[in-house]
Image 1 (spheres, rainbow, N blue to C red):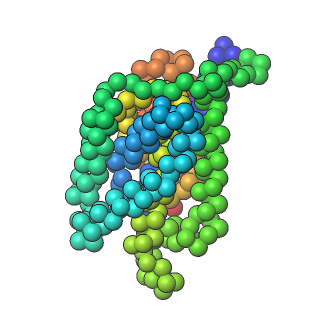
Image 2 (cartoon, rainbow, N blue to C red; image 1 turned 60 degrees about the vertical axis):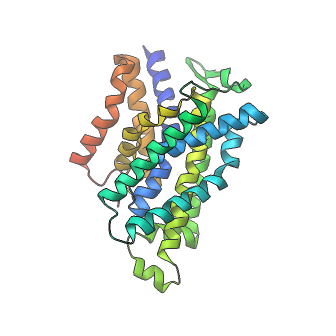
Image 3 (spheres, rainbow, N blue to C red; image 1 turned 90 degrees about the vertical axis):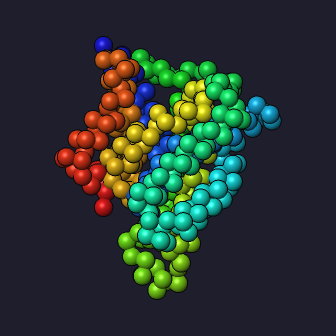
Length: 288
């Protein structure tokens, strides 16, 4: 019983690290910019298929490919935000119409991926993906450890950038006091454009991590819509540390549920945690 519990907790910690990587881009857009980017899972799938293509055609490690593609995703995110701003935000229609815009982007990405790659599952075959590591009764696959470590590294870089640089502090403040930003000679629209580009760039890495964990198909992004919003809200809007803690908490809860009650119950954990958080602590674990 102890062995089973220990393995479930360790697996949940590693799964939570992956969930954090998947959610961080949404946390930036939703928490810092007040943009409900429901298309974020679609960008993750674009990142996953881009990493798969690089591995299939050129033999590049998928995680390395995910990092290499971040500039492309940054530019794509900046363009998407510019269209969103000109079409909706500037006109004051960023509510329901803006949400419909991102729904459209989500479905467009799925259709494009279906046309390019069909509905077949795609996977990668890297030597380290089948390696098991363990200590005592605990044994975990390296394909879960690597995404966990990459996710922590990405969070460390983002946290350092947001806390120690002028641009990072501007991004944190853009949804709170745009007049103060203008007095500091910063253009709020430009700041939000850069921030949204960073949010989408993280999807490239998250997609590559997803590819190393399991085979992918174009519609897989739908499975993460509810989960990423639950983590973002549970962690607290505007808190990357809260996002990481919420993701790990949810990962452990899902792993324990799947181990002792069956995998079919684990998807309900995210929404249950979200409902409890909204009732007990609406601002989230570390929200503003």
